[in-house]
Length: 270
Image 1 (spheres, rainbow, N blue to C red):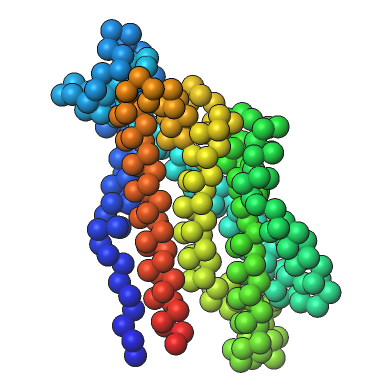
Image 2 (tube, rainbow, N blue to C red; image 1 turned 135 degrees about the vertical axis):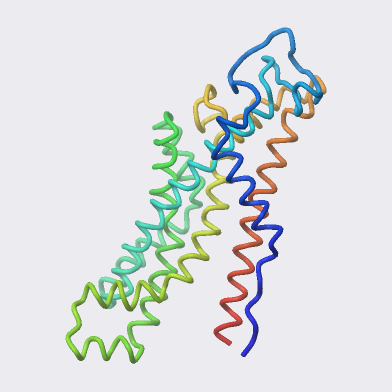
């Protein structure tokens, strides 16, 4: 039996630190994130403002902490919603099969031909508003890959002996779906959810960077990059560098963890 690939503890520790600091950002922030001080604009990192200040004298560190909470909140809510929709859609398609499966897959393939970011861009441009609205839009447009994975798992599992035995003993359908099919599909769902989470962070950042994400008054990593575009022209490199590093490190941690779990699952099936 081959040993499962272990996730490097450093990546888990980094991700936990990021989540922990953003979750308790209201306690850890040294300044109010939207507090303006026109006497201290464009200050480079110093002992008072560890990561410097922006064009309005706002503390960059405080805004990164609070902004991370907004970005990660949007990513978590959207991924939960997209996973819920994808499990239902893919589960019905995979379990029922036949003409129903063929029709549902044609619809899914039509959606997959269009990059999800384009769909999100169109909806967000029309419905631009609150953080919750953005999370909902990302959730209802991010379930396509999850649905395809769930469908594949249900098709693979429903012909296995333990499922056929459950049907032979007249086990209720809901119990077969949840206890036999869905439960045994959780490892694959978990992996795709991790990658969807990284994608959701990237989508939020991309939309906010284009100016159609969360409202500018609400700090997020994406809006910080958006406002930092002009700051680079005056040499204020720290305003865009530090939120960019946070985005890079967070997505990298999620991707490494997801890839390690995926490879461990593939080796377990060999």
